[in-house]
Length: 354
Length: 282
Image 1: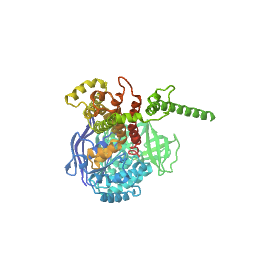
Image 2: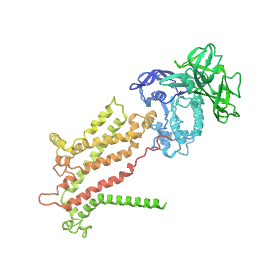
Image 3: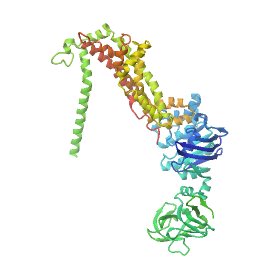
Image 4: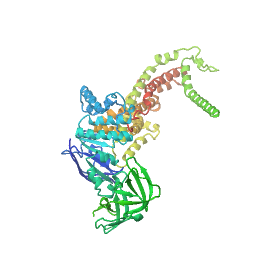
């Protein structure tokens, strides 16, 4: 069990900079999620901790040990690969026992430990099978069992749930979270799925183009996005981001959107961000609406209804009551709570406080 | 419906006819050698041809393996072929793994791979005189070792390339997982990559074995003695100035086919690809 620290870490592949001057400290026992779109450098960051990628410059520490040039086998980390990377020629038992076998644990003791771990992940009846005879969910459990059979200093998980079907994914997500809590092992988890990040993480590092855009608790990232990228990446459905102009605390945008009460904000090329749940749909014409626009689509999700209206060339989505009834092209009023609005500068992509 | 059934039938018949023709073309010479090896000399050239040995005799086998040293030639062939195959396999596997997995600066992976292959681009005959002079200098003519060295030099590029392509087809994550699990690079190679490359090892070994079992030209030049000559040289030696001993040639030739057939039969189940299927992706 240990902390992990990146100090000015850069990774280049030829002239392509995958990770740029990364500073990040992951606390002991913390569950940290690296979140970002594909190609943002999150997997490279994790592979550098495992020792599978050399670092171009900077330092990585596991605990107090600088591990820049340490071979993977001496780093005492365990990794779950996106593809699971199960050894196809070995049985489930030998797959799970592999880390013990290479550490020369005697066969009897190995067998006992494998049985114990297999019971924990409900694989005890499948020990004699080969990986190709297992379902996707079972393979995932084998990969997990292989990682937890010894107590490593750090768990590394590279999109471990992305090959599972939707229902199993939700179930395994809860199991992973519980397991990490039980084992109390520092965990770095890579995903592009913001729901996984929100539900699992103690802290989330949102990465884009090789740098961390924002690091914080899921709540903080959701309620307080500091850049346009983070605002657009977190949340489902995503935050409405509407280009316009802010002058003296009043934002005006396409389709006659007008939101006042924004302090004394003055941004020439502004982007207004507001989450769907912070936009209200008003029946008919209302005097205090921020805009009046035609309905583009109405989607019932079960617990609520997503209503999109057309505002110029933008769509504005809001979460309405599940009993909302409206027709295509029907004109509705839209009310946006000013205290729930974020303003961003299109040039710098940073948030503008007001 | 009826029409498509007829079409399917025609296609099927066409397929069987094609297979039959191919089988006859490849198997008939083998059958003819086998059949001649059991005939009296006079029957080998009988007109019309004698399709089956009417009075089967073993005299040619006796002549070749008892009166003449074909047993020794067969033993030489076996030693040379097995040694060549083992050395080529070991070196080719390690070189192929290095070329498939290790990092090379710039274009060096391609350059080195191409250079290795390019050694096979000249016709072997141009190397014969230099090889003869070299082995003569080291006083190694008429030794099996010289033949093994020469054969290994010719087999190694192919063995390396074949194994390289097999290793490149293996998901690299399996070895990465092994290394994170606490194994060394060598351990990951031995315990993960090598078992999964078994079809490649089987294909490469049968390839090396056939090439060195059948090779004629180098062995002809490098060996003159009974203790070093291989079966193809011995067989060719039965075409003499005054007579061609077709019966003995057939008996020795047919015997020479058998070990390779047995070996191919043993390894063929390993030739099936797809052992690594199911390793990655759910």
